[in-house]
Image (cartoon, rainbow, N blue to C red; front, top):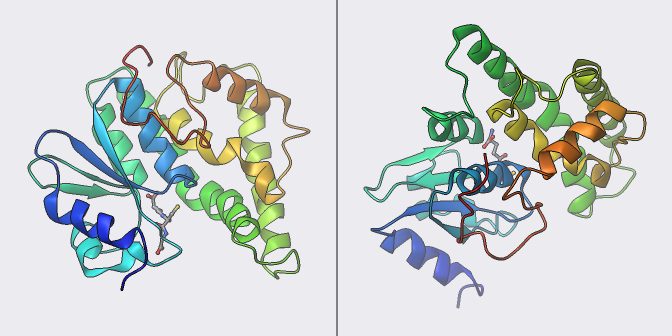
Length: 229
Ligand SMILES: N[C@@H](CCC(=O)N[C@@H](CS)C(=O)NCC(=O)O)C(=O)O
């Protein structure tokens, strides 16, 4: 017999949902949190399907048909189209909304921060958290360098945010959304925010947006709040 939880995931993949977006997601994931928040801020109804990546649920044949890379988040449309990669999903959902500037230069700045997030922020800050979270020891050889590089990434953001409310322009964009989740939980991986005053103020500003819910919030994701954003 399969593990508890595997059968509901198989059924969810097989059935899909004719009426609304389906987000394949893992509650503890910052990459997933980005998409949960975006959908909520936009007031887009969605169904969340929890995927136990540690148990290998993102590597099953059914899941690989949705995302050959075997990773959450993956967003599936009612007509069956699926889109992986948090940055691509954010940019697609933000199209035509105030979360993505229309000005080409401002857009380029948004891309700059989102590409940087994927190369220099998530691979350091989030991976340090994941090492700690999934029970590997403090002696893990990668932890020191990851924390050092993570601290440098946070310091870079902190310097940029001195005298600014948001990463790009004068309102929150998908750049802020892409960088919020793992920054907010950086200390879980031992990357300190203590000396990053502007960054901590930015985190608080973001968390005060109407409709915001933290990564640890485990209910009500299917009930979006249309007030935000
Ligand atoms: N670049 C991807 C990274 C996605 C990613 O790393 N997802 C992790 C969870 S945060 C995952 O699904 N890992 C499961 C696995 O690799 O088997 C994104 O931004 O969406």
